[in-house]
Image (cartoon, rainbow, N blue to C red; front, side, top):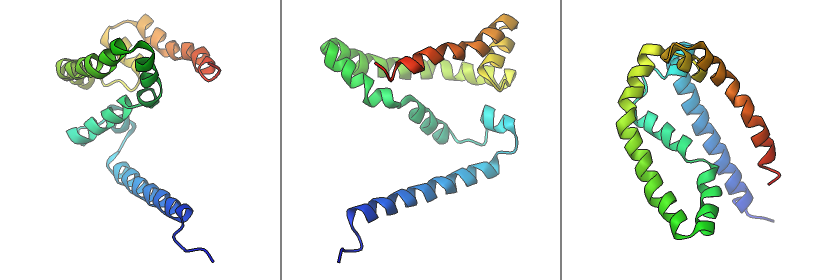
Length: 148
């Protein structure tokens, strides 16, 4: 007879616990969201810590663990310097320099989509249409990536 706490049981229990914690956080956040604008614009109810963690999660993608190490392995020291020194420095510098301006522009324009923001910010309907159609150009790229 097998022991109750096998590896499979422990992993299943941890995954279920993780799911319950995430569901709790989702429902807790959903109670504070009153409208689509709250969700899309990120009302001022979000703490700077939550915004920072969201930004860190979005910047830490699969590329961080899959593509970048291959880039460093292929290009050697130049790849290491660009990925481990200059890219983080440039990311932090751009956040420090541009965050207040983006926040100010976001509160004045109050757009719900990137296309709406570009059109309203620059008072140009051509920009709005271009950024509305631009994601369609990603489709061939997304089909070509898995095939190599």
